[in-house]
Structures are given as structure tokens and as C-alpha cells.
Image (tube, rainbow, N blue to C red; front, side, top):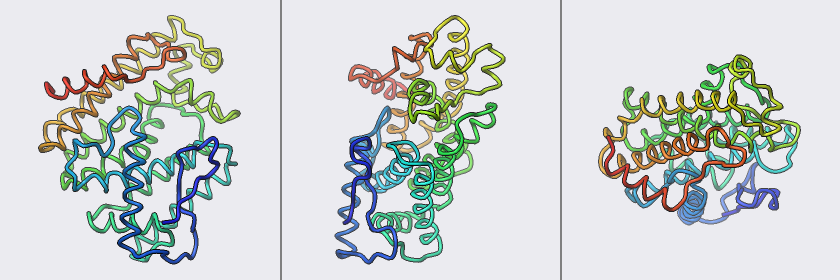
Length: 316
């Protein structure tokens, strides 16, 4: 397995394949797959952020595949977001991922160890390629687009940045019915919105000169909010009302998708109920800080995970 760190100081946890073009497998395929799968599983479990990834709640037969999906998404997202790379370099890295996916889609052996392992996962579980490509489209957009005119644009981004993960998981679990896919989209989009609101200050301050804002410009104008309010970390009644509106909309979307937690069987359903309960807990913290995400960014504590577990057990 050939893995390397890219820009290791600002991107401590980003790893990707070293041999991007015309490489030959360096070790037997079975050993290579096991090594990369194990590294992906460790990567996922160490960087779950707010929500459990490939946790012990999942049946063991799914954990490696979930970790591979997560690792793909995490690496590609970091290419778009982390470190000091120039935009052209970020887009080139994402294009290399896209090229590898297109080889898999064409039933051709990819050039890199990681994608050889991902190909095996995709083929073993009959996963669609399009959600992976949609993720790359969203991350490429992050490189070039920093403002969103309206909520339709935000939701179009969510459709490609978050919903594909739920889509892939339902296909992995053999549960990808039209109804369940719609409910999954609601949950995934809601969680993406929640993350936006949680990270307003981080997204604005990250990558100096970009100052990315995922709030809707038309709604900001209507509320009388200007970008300097974010730059100055200004929390007044106007901002508080605006944040309450956004938080309520995300909560409604999460609630709309919530029935999926009872439709998935066994531990799959319980895992999802934990994720939804985690989203609900962040929403409660967004409400409690009354818009002051600049100095009181919502984060989950050990006590919060106890509450999340209880909510998942009493889910309705």
C-alpha cells in the first residue's frame, strides 16, 4: 500500500495514494485491499466529527465498505478545503479522483491502490458510481464558488455534497427504494445545513481571500444582514432572528426525513436514529446559543452522546 501525507503540517489527517498514474500493484491484491480497508476504517473512526461513522452499531459486514466511502469523501473534501494549495492544484487533484472513478465505471483497472480497493468495494456491493461523481462535483464547486444566491442554490449543493452519501449507504444496505432515498435526502441535506450554521465563522475565516458563505444572499439582504456582520462576529437581534429562521428550516427538513430511522431494520435503523438524534442535539445547541456561533460554536460532549443514545432508544 502506497499512502502519503500531502502538506502534512496543515493537513495532518489527509492521506491519498502516491501513484496517480500508470502504477502497478506493489503487493498482492488481497493484502493491498486488507491494508487499505483497515487504514480507511481507522481514518473514519478517528474523524467522525458530529456523527458516528462505521461505528460498532453497524453490522460488521458493512463497516469496511462504509469506511471506504467515508475515506473517499473525506480525502476529496480535504483536497477542496484544506492546506495552502492553489485552486488549480485542488481541481487537478479532484480530477485525478474523477479519472480513477471513470476507469472503474468503464470496468477498467484503476491506476492507484486506493481506487483498486474502492473498485472492489463498489463491485462487491453493486454500488452506483454517480453518487461518487456527484461528491466530486460538489467539492470542485467549493474551489470555485463562495456565495449562494438563494436557497435553491444551497439545496443544489447539498444534493451533491451530502445526499450522495445517504444514497450510497442505502444501496449498500439493499434498502434503496424511492421512498427511502427521498427520506435519506432530507436527512442528509438537513445535516449539511446544520453543519453550515455550526461552521459559519470557520468557513468565513478559512482560506483567506475566499471567505466562503453558505447562507443565502437574498435572505441576508431581506434581513438587513451584510457580510461585515459575519466578519465582525456581530450578534444582534437581526442576526439572532435570521439564525432562528435558518435553524428552524433545517429542523423541519430533518424531521421530515426522520421516519427513515424506523424503516431501516435492526442495527442499521439504530445507527441512523443515533445520527438523527445527533443532528437534533446540535440544533438544540444552535438554539441555546441564540445565534452566537462565533464564540459558542455548538459541539457534542460526552454527556451529549448519552442524551443522543437515550433519544435513539426512545425515537419516534
